[in-house]
Image 1 (spheres, rainbow, N blue to C red):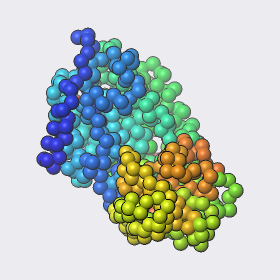
Image 2: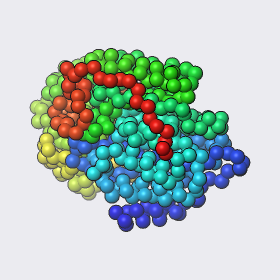
Image 3: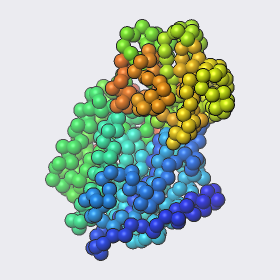
Image 4: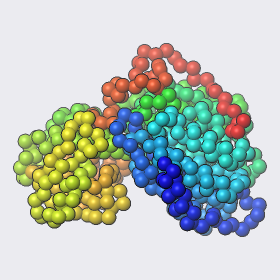
Length: 517
């Protein structure tokens, strides 16, 4: 752990010591954060190497609204420290968490004091031996920057807002769309709220309302593309327009971690006690009232039925979401159960069978063999189940190398192997496939395929737009959509929908004390 910390710190100190700004009266604002969704139901572990770490001025590349000539950039003296982002996965190792947080705190100490801090997190990070990593992180940050610094926290709506995180955040907001097409808009809102409160001299909000809502649902049931999610989230912005209200937010929470903080939350901040309370309770009650209306955003079936639907459909490509091992929700990404079932099917045994693209499965052994064999030549090698072998063992692929691509930032090396009529994308390291270019860069056209199987839940915009038809398959893995099968032991109960007959909860405001008190 000590060595990891020293290596990270050494890299950090190679960078310049903050952004030079003119104007002595400009507020001094730091930037920090870590973002990952991590499932406690997966055997995978996320190390420091899983995080794409940016430091100092490199952090600005995350935010188009913070370009050098942007208005926001000119409104403050900025001191970006460390911001790390990782593809969702298993729990973060304690060593990785301690090293990344340790470097962040050391960087924050270099430029004290700060008027404000933009805390850019996801909110669903699970860490070995901890129940509330983001709450722990912000408390450590608060101990460095002091009680007077305004902290504005930006989150994913699938994050978790513990009471500790709510107390130590002065301003807090989250996305209002799933899929998260408003991610940058939400981060900009968090920054603007912070700047506005500093420039106006109003400082910390007078009131912070926090309401835990005992609902725990997967994102695939709470998309804002359809009702009731669409109508529920449409109620948020009007509440922020009320006099005396700064911001309002609804968190769905993260369903694949077995921790007491995992449940839905409503928060509203502002200076008018009555308006803040009314807005918070209105949104919380609105959420509870529609709890029975949430359904999967697309038809759902088990895999055999999903494949039958795809083979009978005339709409191409027929997209099947392999949901249980979705790496963008926290799955290990290497469960072979679905691929194994596909390769058993007689329809795909012949090269002239229906074209099915499978994206994707990690397989370093096959990658090495394919690089030696070359395009157009036969190859074999084991793939998958190196991390999560609970449902199926590694698969021995025997096929023909169709294409090879090296240098991908996530996968490192990608190989397309044709087995019968199935084109399997094998990666050196796990990678989500969300964009049409992910496929066409490998010489395959998803629009022409009969069936496209992707490790994902609800489809991201590009996949949604190219689909002919779509079904979400209930498959096993670390982010199983059948929550009853997960075996929760530590979340607060009762919890809807696990406890369907639970009594009406208390949806009254819990007032959060001001940070630093």
